[in-house]
Amino acid sequence: MNKTKTNIGAMVILAFMFFIFGFVSWVNSILIPYFRISCELTHFESYFVTFAFYIAYFIMAIPSSMLLKKVGFKTGIMVGFIIMAIGMYVFVPAAMVREFGLFLTGLFLIGTGLAILQTAANPFVTIIGPIESAARRISVVGICNKVAGIISPLVFAAVILNPGDSEMFKLIESGTLDEISKNLILDDLIRRVIVPYAILGTALLIFGIFIKFSSLPEIDTEESNAESEGDSSENRKSVFSYPYLVLGALAIFFHVGSQVVAIDTVINYAGSMGVDMLEAKVFPSYTLACTMIGYIIGIFLIPKVISQRTALVICSTLGLVLSLLAV
Image (tube, rainbow, N blue to C red; front, side, top):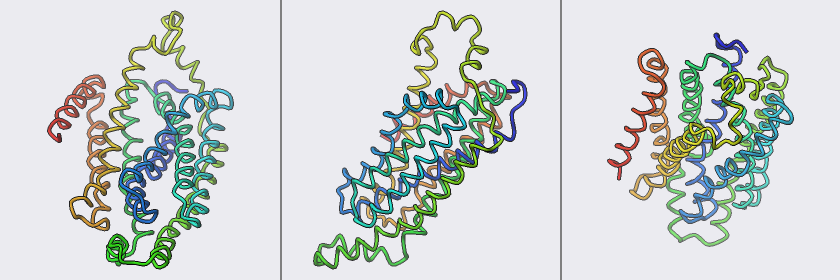
């Protein structure tokens, strides 16, 4: 790797990968209320969409790193895309039988694929250029992620929701329909996911194969770590010997947690206040647009105007203050 110049070709591929991450991840904000109605779930049960998706990161993070170490980053990325595609295809039989547990299996597989991809992609972004501008590169791929997040709920809603669905939702929840009529309507509603998820699964499969044979360079993280650490790494035998790693993991925990709570619950929250789902479908996009503004500011200010450390302190403080104000 060139340590003084960013690998532009690799950045373009990574930016597109982060676009895919965002497109797949943030569509959950629509899936939660959609499954709640079509699979006749409580609010609590509907949030298993988020649980099944993100628990895959927790369970598969270390296996993902072991996989990447064994087969290499490019092959590992291809495997990640294949697993995601399989998860997408699981939605087809799940929709045919309207089985929520099968949908959760598909979501877990999608999350597993993303766990592998993000385990590979995040080090790539850091290593393919100078460390001083790593935050800027992270901001660039973050913008791609959030642009996809803005688009995906709107695209998905446009594909699976019709203008007259508001009245149908009210009719379903009114309890006036007989069981046969209600099941016919719900079966028709849930089967709308079949075509978009089958197409998306095929697209992910093709892109995974493309990555394997693309110009994306293979990286050796152990060599890169040794170069950055120098002789100081010899005395560090555990991940807990790197305090910035532990603190970084905590920072990501709160960062992702705050995003998921804000974005994935906003439609149901709006519904509890009498706002229809067809109106509330744009709310996740508003939230992600605001997040994207933060990334754009980061690109222009870091590291020329403020250091990465100063930016972290400012954003952490603002996050704490605004969270308390929300409460």
